[in-house]
Every structure is written in C-alpha cells, then in structure tokens.
Image 1 (tube, rainbow, N blue to C red):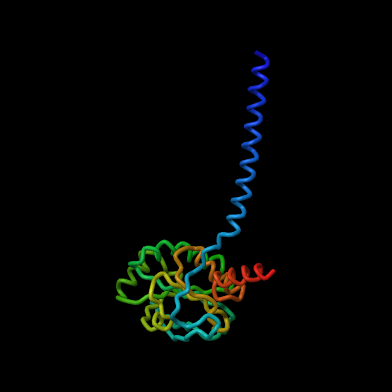
Image 2: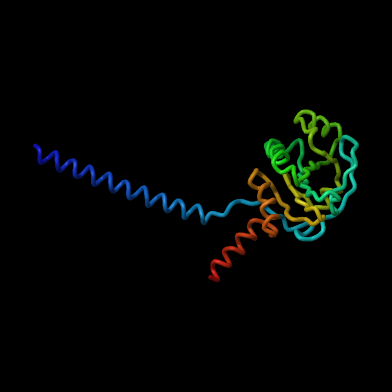
Length: 204
C-alpha cells in the first residue's frame, strides 16, 4: 500500500514538473511571437501629397467663424493633426473619445482640426450631438481633395514647418498614435520603420 502511494506521488510530481516546463516553453514562444508581429500603423494610400514634402496650404473658416490656416509654417511652432470624418461614419464616431484624449495628452505641441464636407446644418447638428465644440471644425471639399482623401476616417499630421510628416487611414487609437511615432522616428510610416529595422537586422 505504501509502495503504491509512493509511486503515485512520484508520478504526480513528474506530471507537475512536465507541466511547468511546458508553460515556460510556451511563455518563451509567446514572447518571440510578440516580437515578430508588427504593430499596426495607419495605412497610407498611394495618392496624394508625399510625406516629407510641404503640405498644401489652405486658408479656411471653421463653423464658429474663426479663420485658420492648415499647412505652412506655424508662427507658434505647433504641429497640426487634420482628422477627416463624417457624421455617417461609424468608425469616426468611435474615435471621438480618442481625439479628446490626444488633445489633452498632446496639447503642448499639437492642434487637432476636424474636417468634413456636406450639408452645413447636418454638420452643425453633429457637432452639437457629439459635443465637439472644443475642436476647430471645418467644412471644405477642397481640403479633402488637396490631400486626396478617398476613405474615412483619415488623418494627416503636419509639423511646425508645414511639412507633412505622416498620413493614412486611422481606424483605431493605435493607427492615430502611429502617425506621431512616424514623425518622431523620421519615417513615412511605421511599416517603413519596421522594414528598415528588419533590413538592418538581416544585414547584421
């Protein structure tokens, strides 16, 4: 009887040790997989002004009647994020809290301008319904055409010198933040940065 109990305990400990080794191995593999999976950045479209070039410049008036300039060097050294949206775009609506958060967190260096086109009364109602009074909100078909915006939501990041630093479809907070990351790293997109890094690693 005692011998059977000893054997059963021995087998149990062997199973526990085997499970522990398996968990450690799986944890390591998950870490490797996480490193290999590239973070999702904003998807750049092939058309429109190129990153690294001067952005088109527009003199516009927002829905409150305030004149503002999009593009060109900033007299106060601030960058501008132009976020193209529509009242009928569900993804755009989900990103409004993210834009509020970015305005609060990045407000020291960044201005956020919301841009759309279409019926002004409907747009004003959208601004009221979503409480967007804290943002500059412009209606301009020319602005969207200037940046060749074909799908929404779309964002363009212009630096303090009027140079377009990043642009692309932005379906999530990660996509929006990838524009800031691209500007910081001096690349057109996160995908370009990862491609360069992988190329350097391959050469090494």
